[in-house]
Image 1 (cartoon, rainbow, N blue to C red):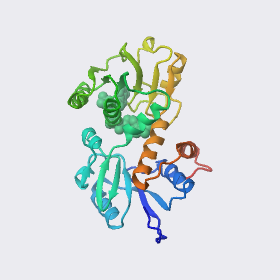
Image 2 (cartoon, protein in one colour):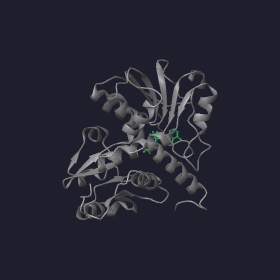
Image 3 (cartoon, rainbow, N blue to C red):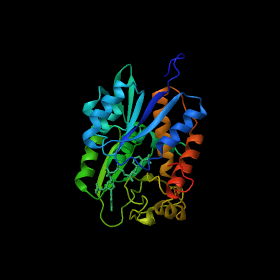
Length: 294
Ligand code: NDP
């Protein structure tokens, strides 16, 4: 945090490539303004071979923390001083916190998902089917296991990747784990009360794509979640609603992980409603650049 005598804002931001179109800065700065936090968030284009210099620059200029996004979530690990336990298990970092000059790697993607999910249903004691085994699926699966889910069923096109995630979850030893290669329509495990699309299917500009699912198994009251933040109402969620499911969009996860980041950096628990409103505006502004924020 900025000392009371300093007029300089605390610095935070994001290192990724491509960085253009990232709406997180708009959302985080809305929280800073709303809560009177003297800090800025700078969205930086950082190529893979410049990551070490970018991290050294953040250290040299005393940034209080930063996000790292694609393609740096794993490459950043050797540049940090320590990993928080869940980042270590997930094997990827999306948020770095400067604690007294030491850079600590955190992974808040899965925690953001669980926080958003808890607004409509607690995963504790529930079985969950997860479509996908990439970075988002891995973060979500680990945090669901830590949050008390009783069973996780992983379905992925690349069977080896599904097996690898299954192994990580089995090592955690928190819940029953099953994996399945995704062939044809993905099966929703009959015991599941939550279904998550953690693949990249449905992301704009490929908004017409959607995971192929056995829709007969999607019944009234099933909680169906998507990680895709743009569009908010994916084809997958629209179809799930037709089946009577309760749905959660990917912007909930994005908002909540950013709120956790702000809390880790500043100690202030920000108002997620303010952040979500600004996120919606930023994404719509990006879709329709006239009057947008970039
Ligand atoms: P990865 O590249 O690590 O993983 C992509 C996943 O999607 C893999 O499981 C891959 O399967 C699957 N997939 C891709 N294309 C297809 C297809 N045609 N059919 C079936 N499966 C497919 O990406 P991430 O996990 O990092 O990101 C996934 C999505 O999550 C992105 O769209 C991203 O925007 C979103 N995301 C959202 C966040 C939020 O806060 N809302 C945070 C982080 C990510 P396979 O292994 O077989 O290739």
